[in-house]
Length: 447
Image 1: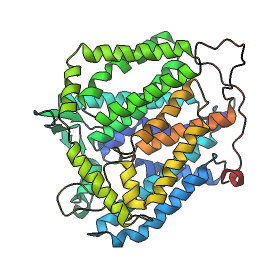
Image 2: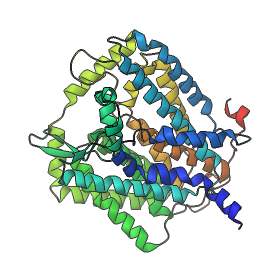
Image 3: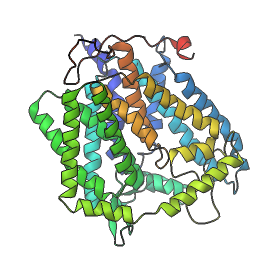
């Protein structure tokens, strides 16, 4: 293989290493929330040179959302307590929606030779390991925080903005008294504790899929041990949304394996769930779960959700451009869940287009098996999290990478077809069968 051919084969991999692999570094520098739009610029330029540009089926729904989201900018000045900071918040979120679009298209164009699925799983598993190690560090030394380079370079007017400060300031964990005493909840390498929980739930399926694909026994054992060890920080984080979305995702996988007759894989999932249950019940972790369920802040959440519904009803078509500030010192309405962010910021049609795009993808790729079964679960988990977790800045990009791999697999590789009546069902995640349809060109993809 010539040097030029080797470089061309590997040229599409750099965003994995630079963005996801080095994400803890960007967090420490204070640009973790901005690395996606920054990386999307050269990625978008590379897309402009590709002819023809392939689009996954159903992409028209996402384009409709992007257009509606941009149109909602005209409502920024109509919101209660409108101020210049709302325009800044709109630009920030809008840039992330656009960069997520670029990530989807970029990885969808790359073949399995250029960007192997196993490589993506490996990088995402590395990111998960980094998140877990920083989470444990936050639990142990929760008081550590520091001013990042970006924070020091920002003008004082921007640094004084609470929203901007939360994006550029670095801290390992935050203290809470949810259980009646001081508890450290991990944050790093993100900006909020809920963001930590949301990303962990989305990254774990990548690690499990890597277990399926790894042939080396030692690596597989190491991965399994790491997943078991992650149970402790997941529970200590007190993220009920993480517990819920991850549990629902695993149950979905188990049901799909059972429906497909994958007896061995189904039993493996059940055994894994039994091991996790044993670790929880036979250790003090079980008491942490019971205490967390007994001490909840659902009243505050319910109040925010009720205010979000009222705000959405006040401007149902285009929303208000960005979340709405309240007269109190509490968080803005429309910031505690991607669903509410869409409804308040961009209107009911935008939320319907957003959900419709990912819902259509779930249905379209439901027959993919093997490692793609777990990537399919990433999309499902992301939708489950919508009422209580935001999807920006990192989560949506993880979902888009997963979606690009699913769409590429559906186009390039076979899809599992129903077994003949007399055929003996396979006991393990088997190979994929011929796909019934190919991804169409630009004109067909918008239909």
